[in-house]
Image (cartoon, rainbow, N blue to C red; front, side, top):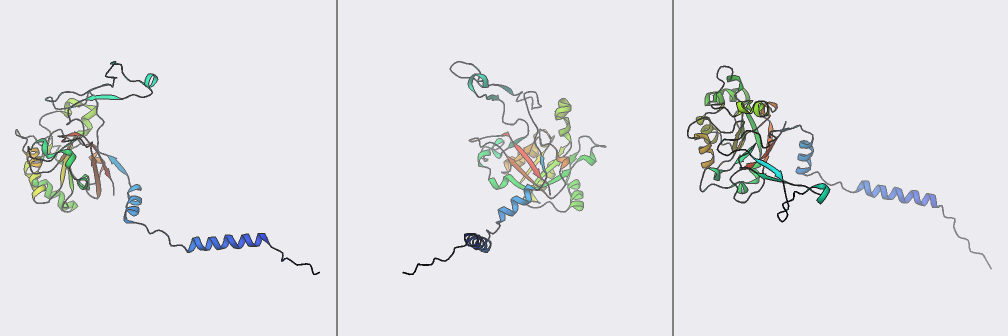
Amino acid sequence: MRRSVHPRVDYATAAAVYVAMMLTMILAAPARAETDLDHAYRVIAAKQFVDLTHVFGPETPVWAGFGQAKFSAAADPKTGEAYTIAKDEFRATYYQMVGQYGTHVDPPAHFAETGITMDKIPLKEMILRLVVLDDTPYLAKDPNHAFSVADLKAWERQHGRVPKGAFAALRTDMYKDWDKDPERFKRQPFPAWAFETIKYLYEQRGVTATGHESMDTDTTDKMDSETYILQHGHYQIEVMANLDKVPPTGALVVVTWPKVENGLGFPARAFAVLP
């Protein structure tokens, strides 16, 4: 009887062929196309960010009509004992303060009975192109200079027209007194917007929102600029910081705040993404 002959199997060669086939299939598979958001994230993640927000605490400047904030340890309402990590494995802070505290958002409802509250401001209005209008060249001669339409037009001749839908911020460098000299920060008058400039920015340039470093928009007796902004359905950011670290054009601003039901104002977090 003839003995059957089995072909010799070269397992090493077979394994190599298998691996080669798998690599060919992987390399031949179409790669996932980069989406617009993938590209946008890669671009933004590589940029420099500038914080436009002050740190605030119980002693930081605030309008006298509101009074200082109070921070205390959160306590068990049943016992009155403060929560601690040693005793409870967590801790929390109880905050007692007005909404317009520190760097903050003023929504239209702050000055307008029928204006929208901060929880209803559209998300798309919270990330905008940023222009920084510089009031500091005028302060040597006039420490309380109100940035005028003529100043704005001079700025535009150098940097281009303020784009529609932008966030326009006024740089005065007042923010440097926030920690260094709080009493000077609270001075009256102070460098600010001129009312006609606010109207021009919204009516002729179509900006979405504005911001500034001081606690008020202008130095008029009736707060004309703030009244105009809020009663025309726009929001503003007050007590901004570090605008001297942002170029006049090309940056983006991101502003956000807690979604307080029917909120009339609250501390905000604002930052710039540099070009």
